[in-house]
Amino acid sequence: MMDWSASMQQTFKYHMVDPGTWMDSSAIEDVESCTIDRDLSDATLGHASFDHSEIMDECYIRAYLSAVQNGLREDIPLGTYLVQTPSYSFDGKTRKVSMDAYSPLIELKGSLPPVGYTIPKGEKIMEAASRLCREKLRAPVVAVSSDDRLEMDFVADLDDTWLSFITDLIANARYSFDLDELGRVLFTPAQDIASLQPVWTYDDSNSSILYPDIEDERDLYGIPNVVEVIYSSSVGYMYARVVNDDRDSPVSVSSRGREVIYRESSPDVVGTPTQEMLDEYAVQLLRDLSCLEHTLTYTHGYCPVRIGDCVLLDYKRSGISNIKARVTSQSIKCETGCSVEETAVYTTRLWR
Image 1 (cartoon, rainbow, N blue to C red):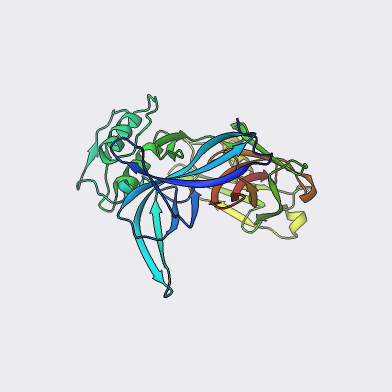
Image 2: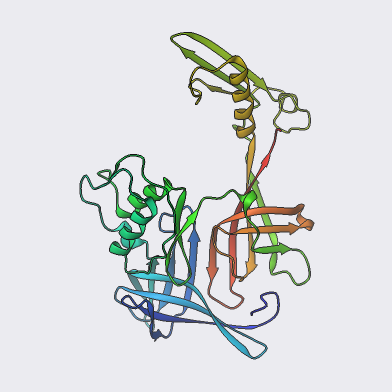
């Protein structure tokens, strides 16, 4: 097992992938540089770029980090991407070919469901999703077991691609797409950060792979300190108001010196609520809205952390102590040191 906090020799290698077997085929020589970007906000979960000396036809490329430590070599896959849009430049002596490449999910994005395509009510959601992915993708698909069924017919919109259609479909079972480094298509259940266990700890010890610079972005703008809830029906009208006046809260009325009001005129309640129920609804709504999202950006040496993973940041010199965060994006430089620029998010409650 590789010790990522210790010294090692690092090189990179690249292979074409046989779409029929999804195994490596021929090696690709003379790749001058490669950057792999993974991103949860991207529908295809990321892309890559390769600089090469020759133009290549559309093909899948798999990138590896080849690490040697204590005389043992390990080839760690970093990603599998489909080259589609090569371009080249020539300086009078050498030609440089830049190739943009995309994850296997691009095959779903490039095709459309038939007009009116429908999955009928009662069908198992994840079984239908797995079947469609196997039909439309060359990449292997790893199925999951789920008993969730559609409560109504699920019909494709006119502007749907297979990617958007299946993404919306699996959201009904609280799943989302995922990919591993070999390019296999996975499905991940939705989970709160609090329920996740960190797969890695970044700290400021002498053996840490964390680089010294870290940025913490947060925005208090728009977080209310007053919530008003209005309920009206043919039989009556009710009103609830709750105020955050906690002096220890940075967004309270006393801390800000002003009110920031959120008004809910269509509360999500069942039946006709009592005044007590509406008051409780307003309190819970203010609690939910009094959450501040932090976006952490930092760089570290390569380790087996992927987007969607939970990490623990214990970087006391920067004022960050024992924070659990979810990794949302990574940019991996396939060069000496194999640095990874990473973004992770976490939330803090500003009113309890």
